[in-house]
Length: 285
Image (tube, rainbow, N blue to C red):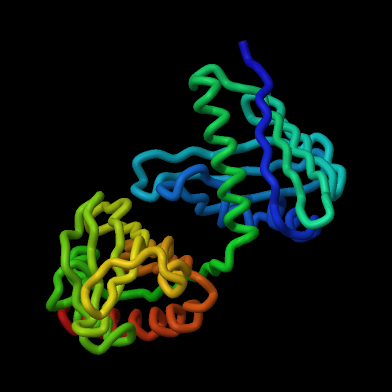
């Protein structure tokens, strides 16, 4: 028998911005997931009474995914959203404004497949993901390019050091990496005597996709630093690579989430690096 469960969170931002980022599809895709190993690649929202919504939710390693669908029943601007899910469960989200924060409260009807506490944790984690998105200084961008080469050839250019060095000079003239390209492993990307970054290979499908989470800065003397004021903004940077094959052309997509202080460098470097990746791989065909 279903029960109603309530979760809540306080967001340190103006109500109008909280409302916008909670309800618009172009924002929803950036936060609607309960774990960093998941994402929301697409969202369609008709945000009116009686309107429908559909949010695609997938694991980064593509092991599982589903469409989260429902219908808006009653929207009271800046105050509450009531909707019913595809399986007829009801959800009410309310927004309460305080002097310097907004409290979001969600009450949802439980489903029968999972433990009640597990459901509560999942909904709470999604609200926490929203809070990070609203309050963070992280920005998101995508760079992509079409390459006339096979997925296997491009994959080798990413994961084999001597080939990796042929297209990554936009990041560093002498960039190298240490470690194994395997899910659950760590990799150090460094420039000798200058330091670099350590990443967790959070998800990986050979010749298809890679999901990396930056966990620390590597100092010039080869020490790991995740707590200093200069390192903290870099930690939790996310890089996701996808190789999409269509009609014998592979589109390489780099989805990046980084602190705003690194945005210009990362965006310009990725745009340049992908041109070099295309040139190098097409010269090998």
